Length: 82
View 1 (cartoon, rainbow, N blue to C red):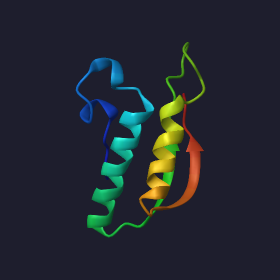
View 2: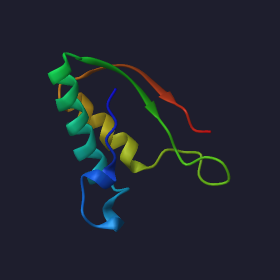
View 3: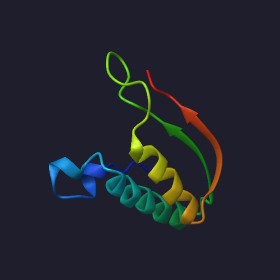
């Protein structure tokens, strides 16, 4: 329904994968969900996977925290790393 990335929220390339960018993206998602009347979410977190890291980075945790602080109810948290 809604997809926002860290790269859409910050100007510098080095900040795209930072927890700050993830927090801004999550706040934007929460705001758009509320305008659509959605107040509960199932969250899927994805790391790079493949030959790279299989664990989600620090941005995943800050994004979840930002969603919870924005008043969204979080149902399931699922890791969908390939």
